[in-house]
Image: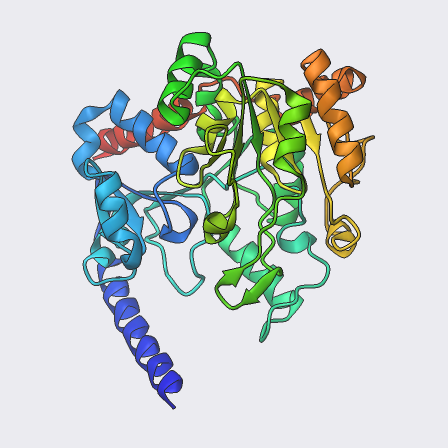
Length: 409
């Protein structure tokens, strides 16, 4: 009964906001006003944040008209982390006039279909990664309670029709976005703004500074372990398992001295990572900008994660350790390309013995010589439009559209 009452009150509140929004939609948009949003307001990061920073750097006079839409429960944390940014709480009365009258939306995820956009608002969709798993209309069987596959496809397609611009990081993604979203408006073939830093900050001075800041020591080598979030491995709702699939002593025996290991788990399992006895060499990092972790890492170890596409910008070696491959076989059928050594930019191992053997190869060569050409091909395919200037391209577009609007008045 209590849950039903809460659900009913939420529906009433939603209806009230929708009515407010429809009223503000009758008014003109405010020129130069931009609303940014990352992952439905969960954080201030990713492509929208990179564009925000570049827009402020290029046009400081616009700063007072730039907003980040955030979830109310995240507001306090994000305000503390980003006191310089004007935050507005998502789906609140104060948020409605801002979002309804913004000249631009810059977002990396979908907005609910029931939330209407001003016809004069330019919607720039950045998306949030090169797709590994099938998206939108490419998903053959959608398993969401209360929603058919056809309904899901149609919602995705209708949302994509609201986007005036969509960023594509590479031709591979552009082809998928065109089909999966049935997108017919303007593509921005510029790479991902969030990856600009992998070019601008990829130098010895910056890397040394980041190592000192993040790890407290300029280690000879840094290895990053960034596994996939396994949301089906739980003890009870909200409490999840996490066990390292390798022994830390054997790991360091294989990689040598003055080497650090960074573990990037999901924040829900961060406190379950046991690094006892290795606190001076193993660092669990969940809140830091992952691009900073990429920059200081000499090797990425991952499994089914799309981090491989971003890390490929650095042209550094990768090792794939899908220790539970059999468990994930069904999910792998939903990938866009075969998950094997013929298509990945590094060796694939499924057991500790082979894992340690590959670490020994890396220690000796500093890379995986047998995969040198595949790594180059992977970089060419998935990083072809990345050059460190994507944020600036979007910032220039926004400024151009603001200027054009002024000229037409």
